[in-house]
Amino acid sequence: MDRVADGFIWPVRDPEWVTKILVIGLILLIPIAGAINGIGWMLATLDRLRAGEERMAPANLSHLRRGVGLFVVQLGYGIAIALIAGAFYLPGLIVATAEGNDKNASPAAIGRARMSSTAPSAPSAKRSTSASFSSVQRQANARLPSE
Image (tube, rainbow, N blue to C red):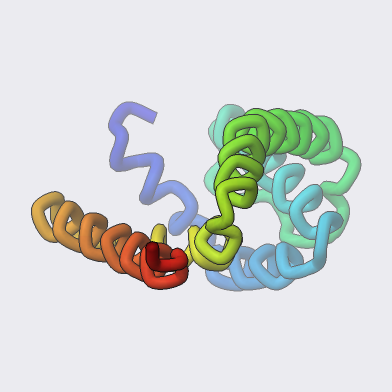
């Protein structure tokens, strides 16, 4: 491949590319085995590309053995990232629960605050974030006993 654009055009050169992509897409819906096969199919297709072939690898379940190694590596990295994220999330959750803000510390409340803070542009994201966290703080203050 001489140009970056060739990376996007190469799969379309296979006359059966639509069928292969659809079949692999359906196989990917199978839990775990579909992901393993998809990784193996991607590696087999890349091998064909390196060899200069114009066709993608056949779309079937024969790529399971090839994808296991990379799947295990990805799974290991995913677990490591989840453990690191949990190391930061759980202490904050424990502190928030210990302070009596257990309703605001629930994963659902945090998820709602995070989802409402996603916006297309930076200024609107800043307004949305401050508004969502202000509403969470007002709800927490409303539950506090008055002096």
